[in-house]
Length: 361
Image (tube, rainbow, N blue to C red; front, side):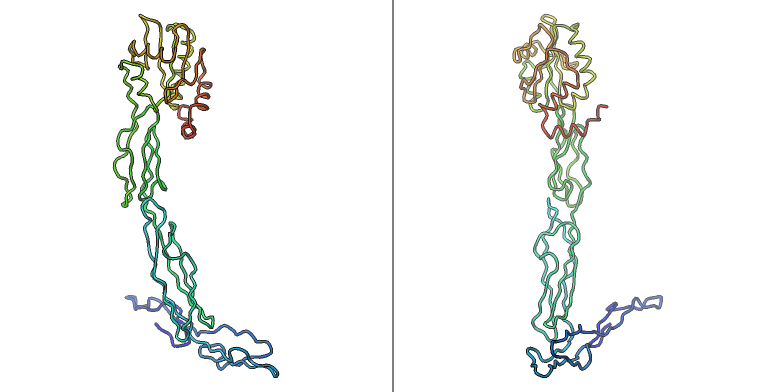
């Protein structure tokens, strides 16, 4: 479908006869009109065919005035411009953008060799964000006749299904977390060890590399021969609360033991392991839950942290094994947790604790 000079095609540029004996579309030609010329002060103009194509308008001045500038204007076909095709780009690995470039559109005009092409949109050879961006070019000839074209730049960020953090652990991910090229590392809470891969990468096919890791309870070896060998297992992993009492019948110990049993979940959330040192030689014993400690380890702990056998006491150690606080009377769980939360947890641990605060309810 094409139109005669001076007419513009509206509708489809081509139509097809379908099996239903109907045409696939319609089109028609509309006569093109030039914009109305502004009146000139102290003068007028006269046009041969109004404001249609090929009409010539001559300017005429009133008596006593002369023309400065063009004596006439002729309306011709508007310029033509052709944009490049729309394009789809995949975001680069580890990024949410893609660099997109294209050839500049070609503008032509039958009469005017000086054309002004204007870009409406983002420049080529720049980074485009995820989603669709409309790029439009406009062209004007000297008579201010206008033509335009547009195309779409679409940037797709390929994403993997979001990863779930392991039980008793968490993830730290680069970039946007699950986009192509992002890396997620597995971390375990204190007292738990990673079993499996340390990290996974989101691949181009929208799947994760390797298999998920797990956080399994840290295996504490209680059959070591020295206090330092025991403490090394907790270094930068868990805090320790050492509870000492003259014997199992000590009233302070019995009261504290009941409160600790009720707050066992809260201690675990704060990565605290309880070590009990009870009685005196030759009946002295030390234990971590059901695991018994040797006499060498018991004596080493008492010497290292100056823990007496004479009366009830507790020593709270941080993750570096440093003595942070001592208690000589039973402590309620709220008071103990408040101290740990305020002075031993870092900001990241406090945030994770807040997310899991209802876990023990």
